[in-house]
Image 1 (cartoon, rainbow, N blue to C red):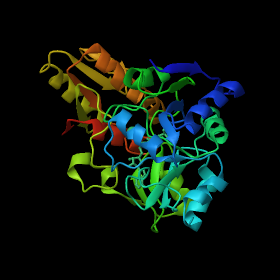
Image 2: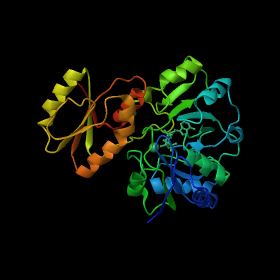
Image 3: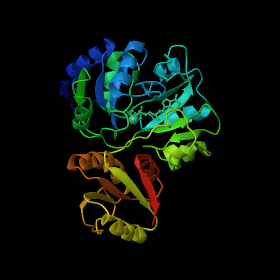
Length: 338
Ligand code: TXA
Ligand code: MG
């Protein structure tokens, strides 16, 4: 089994952080909390260590990994140029759930970037993550700490379930605050391109840089759109087949009622406490923020209950709703309009 240590996320115990940092320095793997989801970390500049990440997750080698930094000086050593727009975004959103894709320097191994000439960088807003990076003295490459294709982990328990025994250390820093991953924005071109909606909303980004282009994968289904780096694979999926029902709330409710009769052990994800359905029903929250925080946990709970189908209500694609709908669409086996 992997070693698990509890660390206080408000004031991380120095001795425990040192222990975890030693593992990173020696080329090992440490799963740690961020404000979005748990990450599976290794020294971003150590090729051998980064290769282990791909192996342990079962992740294709061409899917690039986000590099986590604790200060801006480190960013300058990873990125060849930092456009004015990126500087403004960093000023406003770091530390926080915004990942910027920039032209990489020689220093960043191609293994880390999946062979690309760009590198994705972010500064997480979590004291454990920040002190771990500082103490390790190196940027930390970390994808979400789940098995490839599975929902991202929002607690140490989820990490243990997927990767227990395969990593050197798991840091338990409690449940993550945001629940969906960071926003990924490509700032190598102008206007910037939103590659993945996440914790920082499109509306917030626009307040800072005005125009932003949306990659087709943001609103579309993964399988139906041309690939962008790292977007060709189905993600976040629970074991059960997820059917996403879009449309006006009342029509969606009726459609789900109808569909429920077709399956033996269905589950329902609802965003309205008043909607009552037959079967295993989980209320994920009424507001996007709450839904984002609970979504992946609920996917995992349904897996444990062994439902064969999950019927999910859609939500509006505004604010954090854009990230929530993106994850639902990517996990979906089928999307139906009510
Ligand atoms: O919130 C998060 O971002 C979490 C925590 C641990 O920081 N990490 C995370 O990593 O979600 P991962 O590997 O599950 O997702 C990284 C995404 C992928 O879609 C990948 O393709 C994209 O970022 N990405 C990474 N480097 C890129 C690059 N150079 N160009 C374009 N996309 C990139
Ligand atoms: Mg992931």
